Image 1 (cartoon, rainbow, N blue to C red):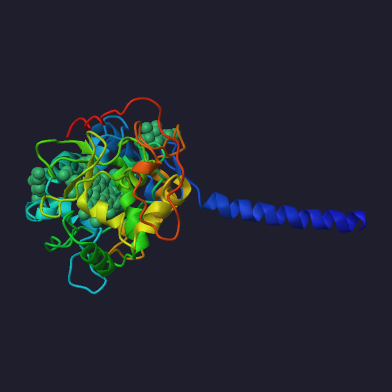
Image 2 (cartoon, rainbow, N blue to C red; image 1 turned 45 degrees about the horizontal axis):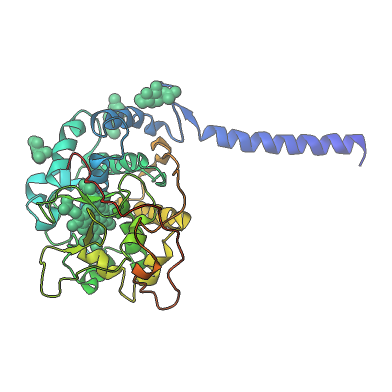
Length: 360
Ligand code: HEM
Ligand SMILES: *[C@@H]1O[C@H](CO)[C@@H](O)[C@H](O)[C@H]1NC(C)=O
Ligand SMILES: *[C@@H]1O[C@H](CO)[C@@H](O)[C@H](O)[C@H]1NC(C)=O
Ligand SMILES: *[C@@H]1O[C@H](CO)[C@@H](O)[C@H](O)[C@H]1NC(C)=O
């Protein structure tokens, strides 16, 4: 190659590099407050994120409000059917039409987070749908180990409440749960993925005598312990007992929902459930994808991708799943026919009780 040819080649490469940089730079917008985002319309969300962290999430905590904000986004969005006639999906109707939707039995316990969100919502310039689904993404980002959830912006105000009986109940059969999710467009693997949310969760109203009872031993971290601990035996499955949806967990202080018990052992979902154990990447990737679908239910494809306003979640300290102290492989009730339950270390020391989530 002669020098002329070489320099011509180099300038073509340089020009191409500059062009691709220019395209990339054009997608970056610096907002008036110095934040950088993909689209100028997203700039107004940075103050809303700060507002949520300060006034709803106690300064970026993965506490009761963050947990409840995630649950609220599900109860809002699932009011939708791909077959029509069931509400506007991820439209914020649960906030705007709270006097109707809070009457529904499946929304028991949702009143606290609606009451917590409403005054903050009123200080923003957001529609109810954008507010509810931004709050879920920001609250989840406060939980170590969680994926950075997507947030799409620009929902219209909700026009009507969702009808009753769209939200699954813990007393529902696996058949009924799979059918309801299918009606909203979700396959069984996506149900399991969405239920990763129960790793940052506790129940207040399933059993009102023990408010704040967590679903796993680590309700403040987005780890795979929920999928481990739901697989432990020693449960008293209430064949002739509880109508409440509560099944005893063998771990003191922990609750297991009847629906989670059944899904973890049903042939349609057991292997998907077990595959989450100690696979943080699988869990977070599939949860993020399913949440992306959830926040767009019933929404037009004109929403703007403002995912980069969502804070990056803190990393997990302990990346490895474990059996709780006092438990061994003999306590596991594997239910996946194809693959044995993975071998896990046991946390050293005597059996301990899981404390309730404060603020419940
Ligand atoms: C089969 C489907 C599901 C059933 C039957 C179910 C049921 C429940 C129940 C009964 C509670 C406890 C409520 C209370 O007593 O306070 C709860 C809590 C929770 N659920 Fe679910 N759930 C399901 C799916 C989901 C999904 C798809 C999400 C989110 C993507 C979710 C997120 C949560 C969260 C974060 C909490 C904890 C709330 C808190 O600690 O304040 N759930 N769920
Ligand atoms: C309020 O929302 C409207 C509609 O989305 C938007 O045009 C306007 O710029 C927003 N104002 C502020 C101060 O963010
Ligand atoms: C970005 O937005 C947040 C929230 O409004 C604000 O606290 C911060 O100062 C902004 N600027 C930068 C450079 O992060
Ligand atoms: C429910 O929504 C109304 C507006 O429709 C609001 O005034 C009220 O404060 C909300 N209730 C709760 C519990 O947030």
